[in-house]
Image (tube, rainbow, N blue to C red; front, side):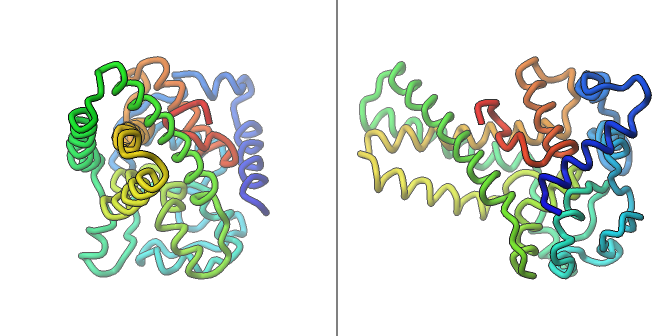
Length: 283
């Protein structure tokens, strides 16, 4: 069964399993997305528990769905590739908790990234890129703002392409599935895992280097430099917003961001084949 069909099946299960008076509007109502602290999942737990329950999601490693499971008492990463084609149904049934990924302590530690690493590491870097572009090419403030805005929108498009075409691809080999789980599948399977949500610094640096190289190879430096800074700032905003979608209370977000959050929760818990854009409703 494909991911889109599986997602629609979960959506149907959610609607059938809802209370008699529940409607789609109820699922999107702010009261449905209330966050409360729990020891298992953090501040996003209540909403995700509610939606996972309605969607027929698994709360343990052994679901009565006929889908082969992994043993969460052991490191999970090198188990998932053995699921074969059933991986795609398994990964789209979210579970609570934060399982161990690797046996060696160092590998396990490296696989985790607190959200604040992103603005702390990349915020000053891209702010410096912005200032360097301004001084090197004599950009006026209005022109710089235009380039930054174009960069942010360009990042949002790139974010959509990466999410839809790469993160939601369907490799079938053992290593293809294992890599998919490491880069994105783990987030769909364990959406409440706070430390495996934002981009770790090393893969982020690879993407950033590729974007820099492509921009400077295809555009004059006076255009590539401010565009690169704008895309970088768009990336920082994206990762922070993505974290907030999962772990900030709905009432702490302004209206437009609350709408993006609701859209992203629908992507996780109702239809995985839609809502690939996270930081923008354009894509």
